[in-house]
Image (cartoon, rainbow, N blue to C red):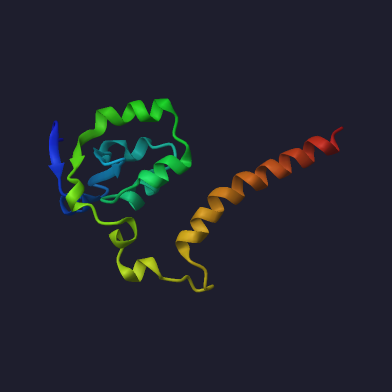
Length: 134
């Protein structure tokens, strides 16, 4: 890992995008999470999907607590040169941005929707069970 290296280009970070070399950007800071892949509570696939990309929105959406934020310090590589950052939508190839699944739904939107619906459905079932036991 590179200690206190400043001004990493987005292109450099994007080259670290697989299970043997996995960097992510969170709030303009770069983290080498390669050694954390197997330990990530959400599974390594979550991190590999974000490998070499800006994962700030995803990190915040999941609601990581203070413990996760403190853990980031041990994976810190440096900061992204702000002039090299590509806007979020253009970090993905156009074919990935607008690619539809066979059923016509967007994979990105389906993923976002499932992150909301699964916990909601579990809550509804739990309330239903509770009410039927009363």
